[in-house]
Image 1: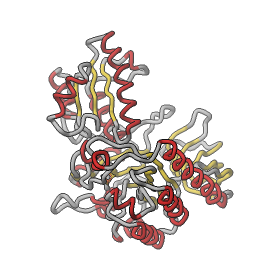
Image 2: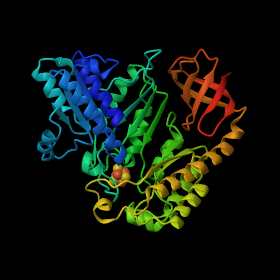
Image 3: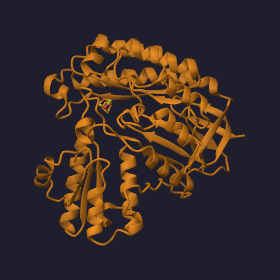
Image 4: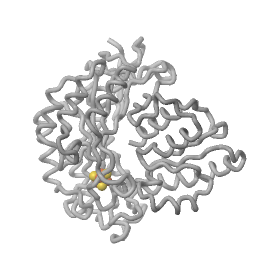
Length: 423
Ligand code: SF4
């Protein structure tokens, strides 16, 4: 979501005549997009801001903009930010470019043609070919679920779906510029349209996006186990171009921990969901997220998570160590009582188990031919792309260009990537 927001900001700046520079010290305008989902990410912002303050001191005419979750959606916080970050000229809430637009307009920099909120973001081009293949399109902004550990509802606000017509126009513009894969984004993407009376829902939106001329692939993320419907699974299975790939965070393998997180499902529900998806889509790529060291999580409860991972057998796990986030229920009411060393032990154990399993699981791919959408060209000439189920593949000795969909034979299979030879 942050990447999509940053690309929109870049589009606006480019339309106003700005060009990217290699080094921050050469920039006339610096825009920092921020993430506070974990404490470590937030700490990075403060160290960057120290550097930015130094650059501003050297050239006070330089404009500094701060964007994203650190700024948040609460206008009452702005005064506090202005005091705290005196070197920052502009504050942009997440997914909201209005302050940047107003700033450019006030300086007469904004051309009329782009003074429009529907401006599609420029795709991120491959530096060697200038061609962008994949674009992320936010369809649901914010989240109203309020898991006890999560700061997103406080920073990005409540759930808001964008109108389907606006999304489809943006997708058509991206496809016309050469984008071949669209990733629809939402904190709970499956809830698309449920907050807009009369709006279509995610399965229909996906069907319409997949029908846009020029597109080869469509994905969506992130799903929430409670909101994936059989209609959605069927749409993925039956619509050409929809990739067999689901990102469904589980967060923990213990019912007690899930209840403390207020995730809204039990372990058995998650397992039943995965079985439902695999019954219809046996070749599905499944990715999940896990938080280790949530307040009160015992070693035995963590063992339950390890066991759940063995049973559901995902193709990727993103592991995060719990850190208390301001305003959240868990930060206010639950002691952060799992020591850092123990959180790290749990993270390493999960990742080691995953690595061993993926090594075993990917081995039979050797010699098989897979479909790859080429996204970029590496410095060594290898083509980088992904399979429909989201496995990263490097293709050797291929003349393919970004945007080409090719068949290639797997010649090496590691746990986290594959190497293929063009057929
Ligand atoms: S559903 Fe996701 S974004 Fe929403 S509160 Fe829970 S973890 Fe945060």
